[in-house]
Length: 275
Image (tube, rainbow, N blue to C red):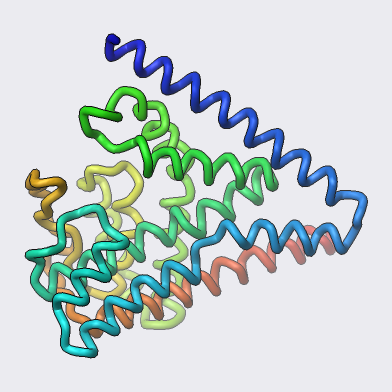
């Protein structure tokens, strides 16, 4: 089968799944609508299931816990569950970088983006976003098996994360200024402007660079995926090498950033309600 045909098949399958998912979201919303305030609460609970905030923190915290117990091997094992790179030969700093990068990138993919699409299109938008994100993680990898069939999923994932990734960076910058200091916020903005566009992903570089600048640590750099070396420059090259204590700082920054996100949403809803 030709490469072009595989791409068309992948696109067709994705569109069918998106249509079905949108309909499911719409039906659930319609069923809850007559319930009034109770329906709103139930819908909010349904939406919260699709936010990866707690599970994300738990996974990253396991890496920090392994370091506290003095086990680099356990830290490598813990971080291997949340990153795609090879971890068996990573040193302490590389493991810490991987954990912080995962937390930063998934703050967009796992929390900000789902919230964004829920606010734009309701449950149908949230369900469709999670479908695209899941499809990208499963078949969007650039390997021989899925590079054509998963092409549409990977490209659409780039599109639906374009705005949320940049919003995440802005939220992290704002949070740094509120909870760390203005210098951290300025550094975060500087690193985003300087390094985000050098990432191989059109979106992941924004939240990662925001975290790198706010924490003043180096992120990214050379990595190995499935035996292949990926030689990317460091984000925030002038920053310090990441250490286990920086994982704790990253978790704290993530939690504060999510607090700021939900505070902004609350204020917007209150303004809309008053008007």
